[in-house]
Amino acid sequence: MKQDIKDLISAALTALVSRGQLDAPELPEPMLERTRDTAHGDFATNVAMVLAKLTRAKPRDLAQRLVEALPSSSLVTRVEIAGPGFINFFLADDAYRAEIPRILAAGHEFGRSRIGAGQRVQVEFVSANPTGPLHVGHGRGAAYGAVVADLLAAVGFNVHREYYVNDAGRQMDILCTSVWLRYLELCGEDLRFPSNGYRGDYVWDIAATLHREHGDAYRHPTEEVFAGVPEDAASADERDEEGNPLPDAPGGDKETHIDGLIAAAKHLLGDNRYRYVFELGLNTILDDIRDDLSGFGVEYQEWYSERSLTESGAVNKAIERLRAGGHLYELNGALWFRSTAFGDEKDRVVVRDNGQTTYFASDIAYHMDKLERGFDRVIDIWGADHHGYIPRVKAALQALGDDADRLDVLLVQFAILYRDGVKVPMSTRAGEFVTLRELRHEVGNDAARFFYVMRRCEQHLDFDLDLAKSESSDNPVYYVQYAHARVCSVLRQAAEKGMAVDPSPGVTNLERLVEDHEQALLRSLTRYPEVVETAALKAEPHQLTQYLRELANDFHTYYNAHQFLVEDAVLRDARIKLILAARQALRNGLGLLGVSAPENM
Image (cartoon, rainbow, N blue to C red):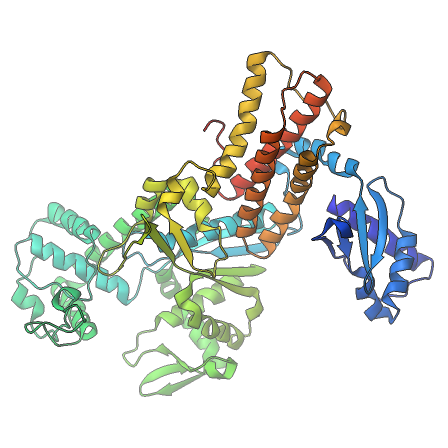
């Protein structure tokens, strides 16, 4: 419907140009929006005001010429010029009714389009360090990223979904060392577990696998492991309520302590055995992450290894490109990237004084590789705590001579869980957190996916576990799914009563849809393609969840006010068509959210 009105405007513009009544170097794409107040029509365009700036004509005069050049159409009952030059379109009721057979014919394709024109878009999301199972914070990024990717695909973009596996670096060394220390405890060694180690039960599970399969083969005495290692800091269990260390607690530094233990593990185990423990921890957790995300309906085209950047020479290539451009300098034995020259708050180290490249160097190489793979647009979905990382990555792309505007970074705030009105405490390093798998088991995939995308990604999300599990109209996902199930129930009732519900073809009988509730539902239905397009282009899935709630409300209101299975076969046919169209929009919208559309509830 919206496109039909755009076509009328385009035809009027072309006519004015051909008549010599409009001298514009280039005709703009008509901007057409739904009006907020139906007293001002159904749609409005500002195309006359846009053209007036280009042609130095008076907006209202140009609007008048456009209105006079509009082709006649049964869709439009009247056109008005308002304000400084807006053109308001009032549509015929039949225009809305005519959308019903279009919706039914389109089926699953209703709401989809080709506006993306096959442009290649990479969406990288979650990319959590494989140092532990996914928690509810990762879950929000997973749901958001998956829906953004699916929305973009729905409007014609060629979408590549990618997970960046951080399988190198210090955090993985901390995990490996944590697994080995737990293994030593299983071997009978008595030791103080580092305050900066990973403490979750999953670390014990991996250590148990190592012990079960290799016995004492990886065992070393505690005294040998901790020899020469700097003193640790007090752990959370060794502090009072005010956070002060208890009298017998250590008073060292947790970072130098864990680094010392990592060095000891590498030395005592040797390259091969250390690598075995490292890979055991990595692969066990990564397999769990893959399984968890798959169970959540999140799939990827590629799992991209950070280590592959070093192995392929991409990191060195990126550093050499920066060096050749004069963007690197040496200071205190380290190699620095002059990122302040591109708007960053300070310069960044790419090679440490010990010769090791930094995580940032890998990230530069990764983004360089993304653009070299030919994506028209790259979308990174990060946690909100990575906000400060954006300027340095964009600075690196600029220094490399790439177009930094091809990179969009979307930040996702943390999700805060509430149970019985009380905030659920979480601490990732201490192993005290609710995993995504636990959340899915408690509230189900449907509620989790829907709740996660109900707010803008940059807004904090309060996730009410009790509400998500409730079967009431207060639960938004239940409310929307129930609308779909109600349509299915009507069809079953018709079958039980022996009533024909196969809709007649075309617009036959639709003129009987004259009730206010029917008009409201019709207008909601025709908005669906516009909502999908806007939600996709703005990366705002919450627009779709809000729309589905409004559509469900219009349906429930209609359901409660009118009978569908009436004796009047003509009216029954018209109403069945309408609710079938509503079911299609609900089903398609829920599908884009990764939420099921049940037929029974």
